Image 1: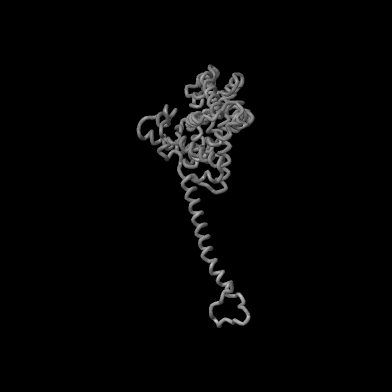
Image 2: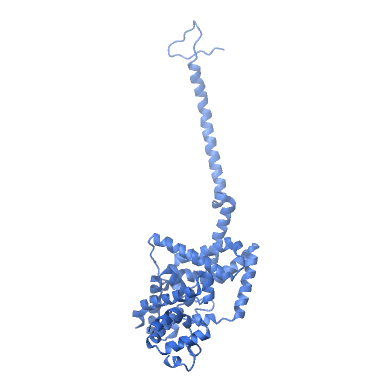
Length: 230
Length: 143
């Protein structure tokens, strides 16, 4: 670190430990363009009443939307219900999507609004998270390509695995204690790997506000995780 | 130090995310190089971001689409047929049969009661003069 900061080489270029968010962001422009094109075609077909297009869209985005809900709410049943609600809204309101901006930014906007409304409602009912995210076996099911990175994967041996699991649980627990606005930004940026531009499109924040709010969110999480990192 | 604090607030996360322009990144590195406290905070922050980023991806339940599709169909049915969309066809038919049966039974009960009423009306008819009926006996019906 000291060497990097000493000015011999820029930190970013020398950084060997790029975060998954950075790696995800490094997805080529070509791939993004292809994904946008695919989404646009699916949306066009859905508008014409093609239910198979709807199925494709759901299957494409269900993990991301469900993941967002689960990290935000912390309860699997509630998260599933909310994620379903998002896709039902998508089906109903697809006519309102004018094709300006990327489709999944629009979908995420529906998801974040749905989530915020539910959090307000649950607060009113004094809702408590009943099933911690990391305690459910489904939380560890690998997807098609498997999880991008696992804490357990960084270290070897049962003790290290147990330590990794303990840290994961701690992170989720402390994440759940953050202000919902802060939690949302950390999930979108650090867990789901969205770019600043995408987050701006979803949240409607100004760039400066996003930067400072994301930083405050990370500092808050760092302070909460301090006992686990010593 | 205040400058470093400003740097932390405004630039540290953006630098960590490689979201700074080259000039801003160079300026940030320069500031960081002269501030051990900021360096320490930067390292801690990077560690936290790395840990959070390493959380496993969550998978939706395998039957997620089927559940969504079912709810969408139910809503469409409700929207197109109103309340009837909520109930199945056999239940609708059964409901109609029950309603018709109850109505028929009610009408039959009414019809059975009607002759009695006529009889009672007949009883209170005044008798013809000179032919007083026996007390408590049946009323003679005049043609």
